[in-house]
Image (cartoon, rainbow, N blue to C red; front, side, top):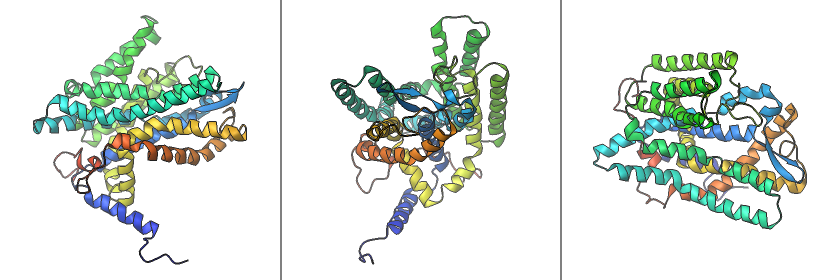
Length: 402
């Protein structure tokens, strides 16, 4: 059936929209920064969907992980534990943004308020929905253990936002901080914990700010131009990889870079020296890929998709666990479905879980449609350019980044 002349073909409309986004982007914008941020967010989302399982048992839902039953899947965590890249980009963008604000005569308070508003505004919608959902589940007789499991999973992304918000607030103090200082803190804390078995239990939590300060201050070093050479990136990649291999192979650190239920040591909760070393390797690889990413982002469709993820980064991050749980809870009406409610103890579960990923993505898209306005704020006038297009410009053009 022929389409009416006035109705554009969907593919043509998509390409035209992508070209409009591409043409509205300043030529001197460093698109590699947005690509790295999008990669980091999507890596975390896919990682959680793959290593988190809700098993239907004893009339309720219980959290487990395929890494607990199949330790040979640990390399999956190496691919999808990408938080270090997000903190690297966050430190780079925040220090550049602060310098631009100072150049405009903007106060620190106004700068911080603008950044935290965009970061934390989507949290209110998540908290409101889960307050209503938890109350409803409790009143309808849902076992308290199931409610606790669901609420913990839904709100687990908030720890990251709190740490990131704290580092953002401290950016004026961190613009010149050498990454070796927080790295030394992590080293000494782990030496006391695992080497000498000394110190109080709370000592481990010093690694929570210190561990993520390492990539964040690397981002500040990127802004200062200290990581512009490929040699610096290779040092981070090879040094971090070697240190991680030695720590996992000879120092007793777990191979998984995410927490595993029942494990004696978690590399992520709080970050260990192995996780920080692995993050250094990731940061080195990210810096090495900058030129290739800039070339790839010249393709309008790819760039427009990247810009869309960046506009909704916090919405995607905050609601991805809810999307998975909504799918799981809805699926219970059809019985215990493989890869959704069954124990993740065989390769078959992995194959079924991969088949469920498009469903999770569809439900997340519905969440994005419903809640993205909390992040993006009021609709902008048509003649104003998106924040993703306008901000975070790279340094003045050089032969390297031109």
